[in-house]
Image (cartoon, rainbow, N blue to C red; front, side, top):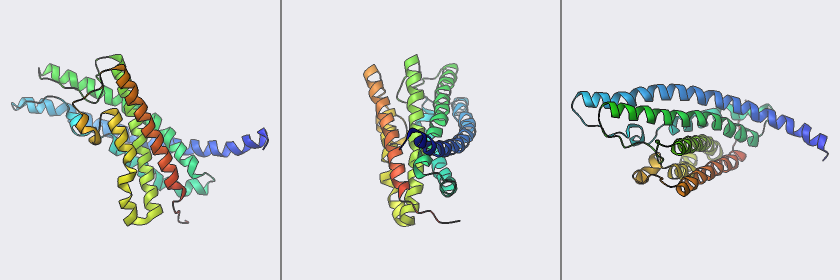
Length: 250
């Protein structure tokens, strides 16, 4: 194949990737706005209300709930894959370009989620300080250092990417296997999500590790590499599942 032919063949792929990326990114960012506005109101009001009525709150409001931002991202992966798969293929795209576009869009949206996770943690800490209450922090990395902030942003970005792609795989599993076997397949398809949680020390799968924060440079590197591998595994699984997914004609 000549270079010119390769370029011509690559152009439709790039266009299909870009179209999927824009759709996923747009919906994920909208989800981020609504989720974080509502969750910030909840997280910041809880300690004030508890303190007002004589209770004792010690932080971890967001983390104690299992860092729930990942679940809206998971839902976006399911919904957007359901909405895009047939039309994406009909427009000349491939399953590979769909997964690639979803992954790229999730990186941008995930970065916003990561930054807002840090912002929420820092603001929450100030609220507890103002109330003269102890604050235990949130997530697996301390937010009192630049490296901890950066590690949290990167880790949470990769977590969101993983959960979006797991959502894509779950939808593909239902299309491929039907309602009964598709439901049974949800558990193994969640493996990348569990690995992302464990690597980032956040989320419901990492609750047993909540009291073991990452406090060394080597630990940070291992955690981030683990989160990256979880995201890569989620992309591979999503592609493999969608490859055999049944698409009904319009």
